[in-house]
Length: 555
Image (cartoon, rainbow, N blue to C red; front, top):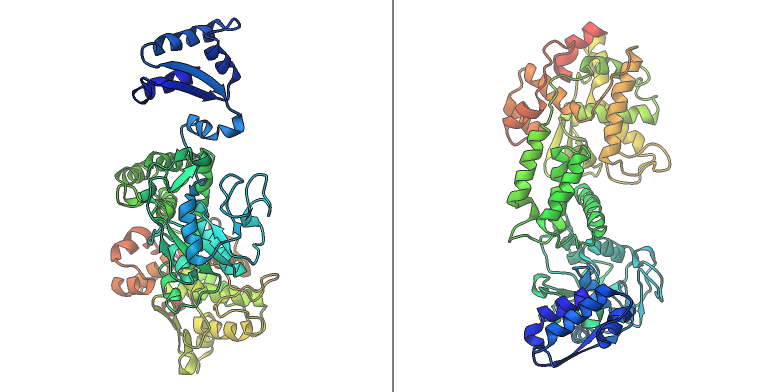
């Protein structure tokens, strides 16, 4: 009853001097208005009388009529103060223009009985002629149509590529979004910009219109799941595949969080983003992890005020506050000693290298590659055995590994011929020797050009992820300690190999510029602030070449 009164007052300027018919799905309201009151509820009787007295002199008459609840979807949605995100329907005239250009689609992948544009459709609710949730189904070999929520676009494009179907997709024209490169790789024909009109997007049978359809910049794209454009691979390299995978995972978490609050994640206000970040911060996440969430949200979110979410002043202030409340703690010492690890790698079960198991050969090669190159496991993941990416110098004195975007050079450690048995023993720690043995051994089970591959079932021969290689580095350190009879150190971090190697190289007289160049750091400040360790009093003081004396002392 109060909603009826507020609606009459709000639209009084348009209703004044007219006969007014109120349509509601509440039979009690209909009865009290038409009978000018009632006997069962004094409150409702007073409200009905108040409405009728207020309408005198303003409206010619007031009458109420009952409407079935399932037909009153527009008012129901507006009473919740927001339309349902992802449920917008294109105007039928615009859809007919799409059919005229690309052909009439037979299946709508994301629809309801009320919003479908095709005779067959998938839906999240019944009825669903082809099944529930299109993302879990095998799509038919027909011309498909999809106007999905923006948060589902990466998954839709991936499924188009995997199932090799023909699809008319209607996404926003946002070329800076992370999924746009995939869209370009799949389009087959010419995309079409949809004509802008006030009723372009609607819900509830056209009773709710989108307030700002121009912000979407909708285009229709004919896609085919078999791209054939030479420039596609270049575009896809704008972001590393692992970065895209990480961003998609973080975005899905944010999209799920928004969905639980009936909010469109693509258009969510900054206040929602900050609330999400605050919840993650309260769960114990560090500011650096929050930065990853912000980068992922910025990659998918609609620009706010002409700029990305990450450049919003409030988001920047939030990160500064989070860093003050939870400052990063940088350790200056490590729990493991390089000299002990190198001693362990020169003994069983890591030697003799021609007879060790695939497991120990892999662990030793990955560790020596990481410690001698100053690279992250993500850089090791990018290494390849392709002829253009891996090259051994004559005499096995060097190995050149070309990766994106630069290259890695591994220097041999005491290569043959050996002058004395001491040199032969130190050569057991040579990364080039280990790499050569690994490449020839792994060729027996390799299924990919990636340098480091899994050695155990069921992924034997498949590419090893950077997370798996990080575990290998930690395992190599632990097993090396065990090999020399020392207890395994605690809290080992694979990333610590960069700080350890760089700090020991600095002690041996290598210039900061050379260290930063090898590690890929843009400035010396990065090394000084994040990677410089106190290694003055550790048993080992040099890296590989200059570690021989420390190695002899601990042997």
